[in-house]
Structure formats: structure tokens, C-alpha cells
Image (cartoon, rainbow, N blue to C red; front, side, top):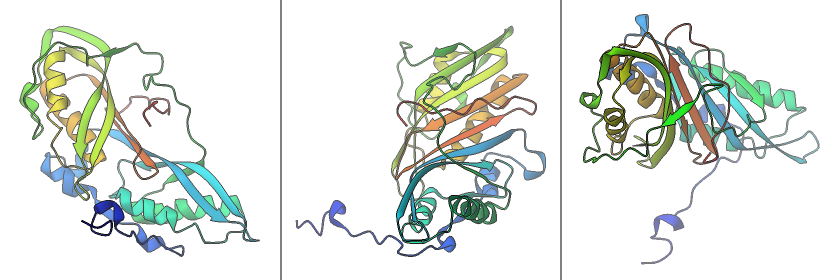
Length: 274
């Protein structure tokens, strides 16, 4: 086999000019209908927070500029933006000249707002690495539980149960969430943080449930909405927050957050793996 025949030897044609039409929006209804969610009565609030690590353009005199950016898309936007298209779109800035940093920021925000169908916030820079994703709450990691697991998909909500006789408020975390991109088939890795108040979750069942995403193909945002919906239906908490911090791929990572209305948004931060 020659180097040209190997997957790593194949040429990838990156954009050579700025092109907003590279952005590929996907209707959120497609994934939500599958898990029984109606756009008219969404049970959650939330955002999708993207971190862009590879952003560059030319100033008015042709000198390259580099930056990082934090992009926030509201969960109630009609469309999500497919991640590979976002990567190609951001790369299309590489050879384009702009008069100022603010022009670049505004252009990205406007283009993404048109693709998502709702206002999008863009700020240069990234939040700090904090490893908490829980504010002042104490995180209990469930990954050390001594359990046998043999269910790797499709996601199986039957693993979830809760003890209605014991109402608690706690924040659980696991770094064992893995799913696959439905477009490229590439693995997506994440740490998920679940904060809730309500009947006490069975932790072993929760871990088995999260691992059952392992061979499942679904967008990051839809995985988090599925987890939120399954927990809401099976455990019936009074308050629930689910955030997943996905590891970086192609210069981007995404952090979807969904919560019951009235829940404060967790402080923006990054994991060490991102």
C-alpha cells in the first residue's frame, strides 16, 4: 500500500478564501423528535459553548494574526452548527484581510447567528482550566465504582433508577462518556457533570447508562439532551443540570449544558483533557 492509499496520506482541501457558506446548519428538531422532545415545550434551558483554538486572519497590511475564541450558541436556536463545517469556516479566515479584531469578531458572530437562526455570542479568549464545572459544589466521581458493564449501546435508560425515599442534592461526574460523530464516525470523548436535587440516583446504574453511549452515533448536543431527558423521566428530580465537556478535535471543543428552567448557568471553564 502506498502513502497515497493510506487514510493519513489523503489530501484535504482546506478553503483558500473566506466563505460563510461553509457553515452547515442542522435542524435541532431532527434529534429532538427521536427522544420525544417538542420545540414548543422544551423541558430545559441551556447553551452550547464552543472553544476555538485555531483562529487566524490577516490584518489590513497582510500580517497574520492569531487568536482563540469562545462561542456561545443558545439551546433554543432552531439549528446547531456541524463541527467539521465550523472548523472549515474558521480556516477560511486564514488568507482574508480584516481592518480590525472587532470586525473579525463581529463577522463570526453574524455568520454563526445566521446559521443557527438565533443570536450567537463570540468573545476572543478562553475560560481557564478549572476541572470543576460545578462552582462551589463538591463533585463525586462515580468512575471508581466496582461494577461489571457489558452494555455499550444504544443508550439504555433502563439502567437508571432513583430512591424516592431519600431526597438529596448532589453533583456527580464521570469522565467515561464516549459517543461517535454521526458524520465522520470519529470518537467523541467527554466528562459529564450531573447536578440535581431530588430522589437519590443509583450511581452504579448511572455509570452503566453513561457507558451505554459508547457505540452510539449522535451529535454532542443531542447526547446531552438525551441524558437530560432520560434523567428527568426516570428520576424525576426537582432540579437538574447536565453539562458535558468534550475533548478537542480539529481545533474545537464543545460544552453543551442543559438544565431545568431557573437553574444558574455553571461557570465557564475547561478540563485538562481539553
